[in-house]
Length: 171
Image 1 (tube, helix red, strand yellow):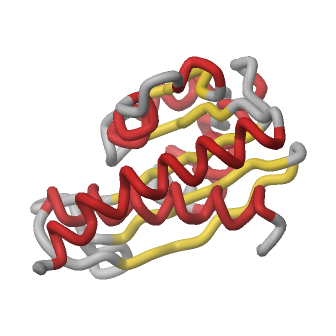
Image 2 (cartoon, rainbow, N blue to C red):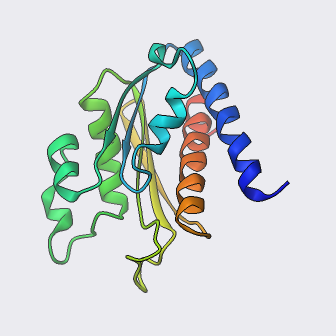
């Protein structure tokens, strides 16, 4: 089985496991997405009954949308700021998703899916993911390989797995 088919079966399994845990814990999730363009929300809502534990998906591809919809500090996007693909931005995105929805937990992603847009400092495949649980957000940087689709798919799976770990208490 190739890596793409492993991931294509892994995501629905992660969603089902996460949904069961959210239901048991009586938690509702929101997403804040940039490089995945709503892929996490799409994966979550692929499961029937997701309206019981999924509230909102914010697709904030532009920097202005991140500011307007999620309250991300505009200084992050100015000269000398960390930029959209940074720890600071995804932390604020994850907190903003909870603050602007009925959710208690969230996932936020911002990255460079390619094939262009990378730099020496932030090459294609660089993705920051943040999770907010109990009003506390944490973030991690990843470097995924492959084409645009592979990077986006890896981001979706990693974001789901990360939230699952954090709300299960295994973090």
